[in-house]
Image (tube, rainbow, N blue to C red; front, side):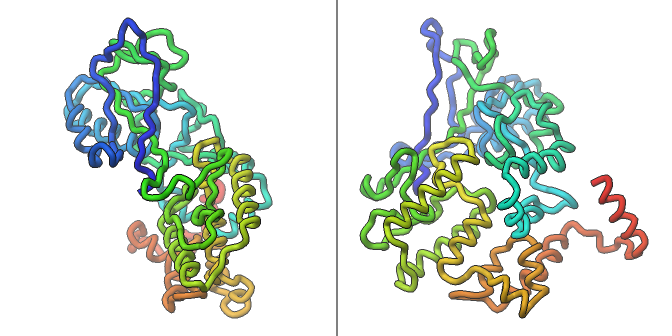
Length: 396
């Protein structure tokens, strides 16, 4: 496990008021050198007291989980507890369900969109997505802490309930914490103390490989020297691969599968890594590309786009679909691969360990996805469908 070291934020504390009344609690501790992990539910049991005021710094997954559990508990008790979400730079809150009830990654992670983004500036694409899809849900100008970055420059917050809670003021958004006092918190830009009983720190984690020597996975000038986020570029022999040390903009498990397949081909001697110079050039180019797009972070080198990174890995061991061949031999499959959602099955069409059922899985993906949400008794009238398509074009 590489993400096992908590980053502990430091805040200013007034010398005259050194004792914050209730103290700060971490929603989860994965520091393996001190104690085993504690689930969020254990922490929630500690703060289930009616009337307490709770603050959650950051907008990460653990913060949302802990905040939602508290909101649900407060609703059941009809409690007046106040809940604050503290954030430094804001974030876009996106519901997982997109147009027509389908998931956003199913709608937007398509090869045709990827090629389009290669031509159109990424900031214009972000503005387009914000205007067409996010603004009708909740305009970012209504946030007290407006996002300081584009939609595609930082991971959005995927959540079904936070927008509703923010609009109904069940959750209050606050800027970053400036300092603690005896009775609560002073937020950035405020002069008065906000009374808070409990602060739940759901902090980020930094990476460390305690089972490796310090000079194996190195970082120089912010650049982590891993080729394709996997192979240390300075090792003489390619006998070590780091799996899962990546931050994808999109689903993660398909990428991990491709990493494992690529690593196996390298270890088996069926593929070879480029020279040190070429690997170093690739790492620096990737870092520079990420630096111009994403918000600065310690793990800038590990940022990858799902489709681009998957195609890069698959092309290394011959699993990337040959679009020209598909166009000539199987036009229907070609259209699904190019214009349909980017599915992991497409990397099983060819190459090592290909799968005979990959084509069928791609062709029938829409039916499987819509099976649980479609109305089986819906009208089959062609005229009604045509009218709905016209109305949807203008109003959706």
